[in-house]
Length: 278
Image 1: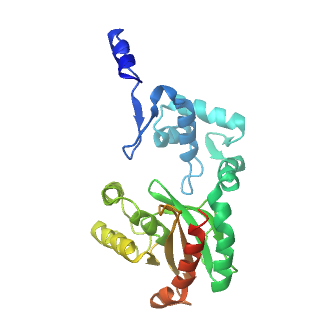
Image 2 (image 1 turned 180 degrees about the horizontal axis):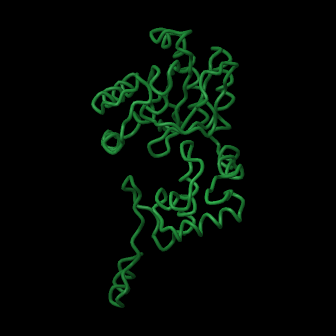
Image 3 (image 1 turned 90 degrees about the vertical axis):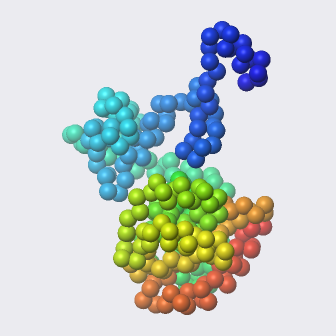
């Protein structure tokens, strides 16, 4: 809005609509241009997760920060549309919700470009490989190849895991401004997922700094016992990190001190080839 328009609105007693501000402090569209109902409907879907697959209206209201009456209306609407199933007083998601994720995987450019390289990488090393992106504080897998090695159930498209304790996640965190990393770690309730999970914020900052300096990250059984991973950033032709790519091995087969020598050269080669395509 121009300064003249702002002045006219003020003289008429109408304040210009304030722009929406995201959690990261970025200024977005004007609030009047946003559809609040769509935002809240998606929050209702996001209220369900692996630990809470069946929820009552009150539980959805609490997790989505809605009144009970509003949560009921959204749940009934989603049930009518086929995204939610209603059994007595409990609601759960239906497989139709998968269409939302499939729309990204089928239309996004990144998974299509990375998938063939993951095949080459995985089968040349005979290990599992995957690529992921950051979504707020989580790492989301967007492409994966097992190469016959089933080392973890988290290595499949759509899987969401905490970023701070994964190799792909640390590579992506290392690409962010230092202040943003510190703010994220300050607000996160860091909890040990395994006995190896680093939960000290000071140590995590050191690990992220080390990743930034050396250009790769190694994580040893912090997300899952028996799972070791090494990851590198995937950068576009402008040098901006757009994703991360890793190789995952079983701890019983490859010692942590050998993973760099065995897997890093192949990862770096794939990284260079993909940088010309992203």
